[in-house]
Length: 354
Image (cartoon, rainbow, N blue to C red; front, side, top):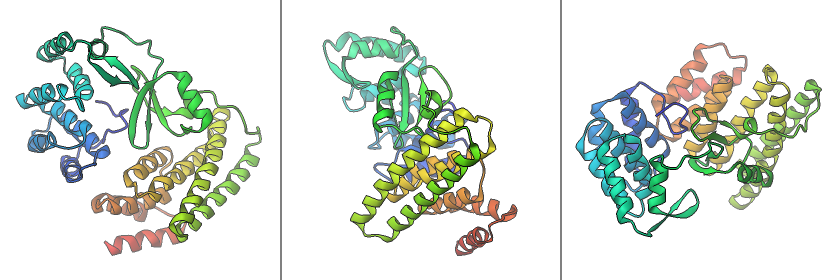
């Protein structure tokens, strides 16, 4: 696994990783951070996680249980391969398990897949959005058929999709099904990046950066006002306001990525990008999708580490009952100079409440 994997939890704190897995196993639908923690623990070779991996084999989420089986195999636990073979024989989890078995480079796994191919006959399975013969799917994952590498995977709504042809992705960008801030990666590449940086964005901005900054600030205020109104409104009205917020956010996205292409080394544009991701985090928060919000807040902080983004992330960590991580963000704010006194006192109050 690599840190380019959007699920990946890049931490060496084993107790923290184990906590994520325990929390995920207690939730029937828990997936995103659980998968990342399982993959990181497997990379660390930590055997204290073995009992949790065994529990995860019974989880309702296919990706969680298949990743747990793969992790057990990497830790030389025989139960790992046995579980993968079992999952590969189930309709619901077969494709995930077949892909995982191809990654093991274990001759026994390859032999099983070739036997499965022989016995599958004309059986069809959904693969990359199409119904395909199972034998052809096995050929593809084992590398018998090689892709041209131009297709893309997309990370959206806390899930990875694809691969898709470029033409399809471009059409989704045009009709709004994909956003410029959605992450994507080409086959056989290692780095995820926003779609807005992978494709030429029509230059909709002027060459006057100062004027663009004023326009950005105006749009940002509108977004903040809409979000504040949505928080105070009733359920139906709130949904209407958040939909309007989403539409205006798309306009802001186009402006930011257009400016990134025009001024790739501008600190001012980086500040805009940082703010954009903070605003993007508001959409999943409105649906109580706290892990989805974290995804955007991590990206904001990776561009520019701002106290505002850390304060929001601390509040999200508290929603996820991760007081330890919330304290890390709050302490970071309190020990570093903060120009905004109101933000500083908000962080101090939040820490005192803990």
